[in-house]
Every structure is written in C-alpha cells, then in structure tokens.
Image (tube, rainbow, N blue to C red):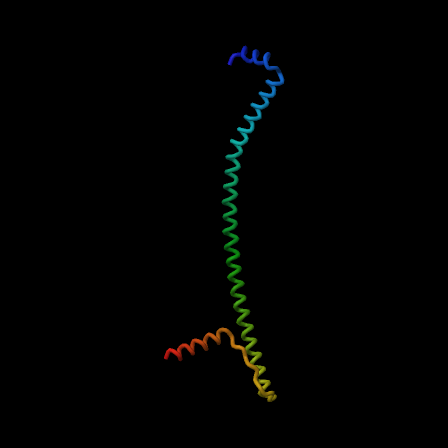
Amino acid sequence: MNINIVIELFEKVGIPVLTAAAAGYGLWWLIRWITGTFRQDVLKAIKELHKEMDEEIRDTRNVTDKRLSELNIMVVRLIDRVRVVEKNFIEHDETMRAIYALGAKPVRKQTRHETIEELKEQIKDAGG
C-alpha cells in the first residue's frame, strides 16, 4: 500500500471519518479475536466441567443407591417387628379373655402372608 493513497484519502475524507473507520476495524478485529480464542477455551472448559459433573452424578447415584437399599432393609425389619408385636398382643388378648371369661373372641385380622398361604392351600385343594 502506497503512502500517497493514505494521504489522499486523509485529505478527501477527513480526520473524523478515518478515525471512525480505524476504530470500527479495530473493534471488528478485537471481536473476531475474542470469539475465536475464547470460544476454544470456553468449549474446553465446558467439556471438562461436563465430565466432572458426570462423575459426581455417578458417585452420588452410587451412594444414594446404597443408602436406599439400607433403608429398605430397615423398613422390612421394622414391619416384621410390628407384626410380631401385633401377634403377641393378640395372643395376650386371647389369654386374658380366656382367663377372665370375657366371652367372644375378637376377629383377628390376618396378615398378608397368612392370607396368601391360605389362598395357596385353597388352590391346591381345588386342583386336587
């Protein structure tokens, strides 16, 4: 580029227009550099964060699965204990009614397991 062309352009257009054009070109170059350079860095950082989040999710899921299985076992054990206490209470009630001759025995509600066993026996009897 010849210096005479720049001087001629400067004389014809003037300082404000050339300053605005130079500032516009500088801003365009800066935006292009920022988007080009930082885009790659940001994409790398996002990929790394995504991998870390996947690992955290996997670890958290494993921990929660273990704790949920422990809670499930505890609930089953508590249900079994409540059933035993209920049976003991019913037996105690029946004993007290017999000792004090209180008469009619209350209808005892069967547990699910007892109902299933009774139905299985009925099916065997009906099939045989």
